[in-house]
Image (cartoon, rainbow, N blue to C red; front, top):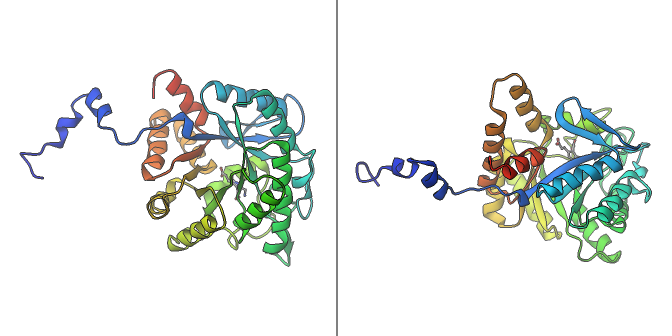
Length: 327
Ligand code: PBG
């Protein structure tokens, strides 16, 4: 392979040939749009650090999901800002809670929509940690039972998939058992298998008011320096029955995504998180970068790294460009 026999520029001469040899393509079918659901009616409150993203009440969330469906984005993942919080996060398993209401409304009005729910307690606990706390420490096994209760409530309401995000040991195993016993053998689990303790979650925590009141999440979320530990986490979740495994955040962990895809060859998801979105929005607002091109480059990088599925706040923007033939 040497010059002048080989001239790689021959395949870059015009757009037609470049498109022909492109290795990575994005599809709207691979995208999942996150939605933040709040109590009330006709609420559409923009999140300060996430321009273009909103806290939505059930009615406006259904309208947003309907728009997404029309654009070809047929999957959403739901997060809640509940009416009340307590020490253990018990509103997370209230069958009349905000998420079950949203699931029912969406499944009723939009049968083709796939409704995925995030399973965790940080939005529901008064202290903002992801489960039951004792002496400042997250109690793993005590939290697992509550997680199953939350999952069964979502499943009963009609959720199409659940996505546990708390990084508890044994969470997938407990959920698989609980769902199977509850009659939901066919409900898939997308596990946040390698979730790192990241500063990129900042805007999300503003969106759902879930910043921990004390301490941090480092005793359950992973150290960003660890690749091999991520592989062990993923291996455990696959053994425990996860159908889809996720790496989160995405951008600063693309090496982890590649390694997960190469080693396990499982359906692999990434979460293009709030801070990654906010950085692009902020720089674009200042006129420092071209928002559309950066968005496309970033989403493509995730796909190229091995992600089959991308959870992204850019889902609507991408689908819109695609529909207009601009992406
Ligand atoms: C809940 C959860 C978080 C995110 C998704 N699920 C926050 C956290 O762990 O603090 C972050 C998503 C984002 O930043 O976009 N555990």
